[in-house]
Structures are given as structure tokens and as C-alpha cells.
Length: 84
Length: 165
Image (cartoon, rainbow over the protein chains, first blue to last red):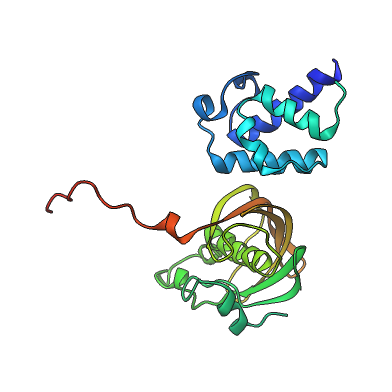
């Protein structure tokens, strides 16, 4: 498994847990709000969990960008300096 | 050390739902140890019949969580904040990975050890455990609290008059 797909699967698992879904229910581009009924609090939870797990600081202003798994991956990769 | 009078100044809860007596350790931004003594005259035991079994005097989990949450609130309220709603209303928003592994009974004192994990704007995450003596009776993976402006809580104006009863 490449580090990119490994990171993506880690994120899928983390987000599924917060949204109380199974990881396989979360597609790469499924919109958290539209398709999985996430609200602003779930979004903050995801942000907090990302910061804790990867030891990065992601400003709240990035939240509107983070609408699906792929977008979360891009934002985190930027702040964590992943060279995937 | 925060004594009861000072807790009343910090927390909005009052009898019978002010479920914290004292905080012995207060390290702003890091941790708090809060204490709550349980007595037989708690309202939750009032309606138990004389035939009630000893087990039915176990302190209810929901009140234990509320009490722990109040200790967490003390931690947040004594910590520096960079949120937007400094004078907003503090609300319990959620809990994850809470395990109740033992019971507390009248005569016991709950010791809540709360750590502040993370603050993002007006949202705070805490974790910790509750002990009775040396015995851990509950662990809390993540407790989520939010601060929201008073206006967000104002009752919406009803668009339709309510039907007469």
C-alpha cells in the first residue's frame, strides 16, 4: 500500500467513526453534509481529531474546504507536509 | 483549590443539578480534579421504596456524567480562551467512549480527574476518569462542550398559533 492510500484509509476510518458510519460507507468524494448528515459539530470533531492524530494545527478557516474525504486528505497533506 | 461558593460563581447550575462540591486541583488549560460527595438525601433516591435493593442506590450514570461535565466546565472556564463568544452560554454537546465500570453509592465521594485535550475556537474537548477512593468507576474518552452566543438559544418565534388544547 502506498503511503497516499494508507493515509486515505486512516482518514476514512477516523471520519467514519466520528460520523458513526462504517468506513466502507464513506466514498472519496461523498459530501459529508449532503450524504452523511454531518453538522458543524461533527466537522469540529474531525478537525480536532486530525490535529491530535497528526500533530498539526489546521485553522478553522479550512473547514468549508473539507467537504469530502479527498478534500480532507488534501488539506491535511498540506499542513502535515505529506509527500505522497 | 476552588471552594463551593466560588463554584457557584463560575457555574450556572443550581440545586438540585449543581453536582460539584469542590475542585482541589486547578491547572488552567491543563487539568482539574473535582469532587462530589453523594448522600442518601440526593433527589435521585427520594422516591425509592423501603424495599429497594442495595443495588438500586447506585448513583445514576447520567448524573455521574453531568457531574464530570461540570468539573470539565470549571477547567474550561478557568482557562484562557480565544473564542468569539467570551460571555456566551456553555453547553454540553457530546460524549464519546464513555465507560461506566463501577458504581458509587451514598457515602462515596466522586473524584473527577479531567484533562483539557483540545480547544478549537468556541469548542472544547476534555477526557478523564472518575474514581471512588482508588477505584476507577468511569472513563471518558472525549467530552465535547461548546460556547454559543445567547442569541443562538433564543426561542424561535412560532409562525403558526398553537391549536387550543
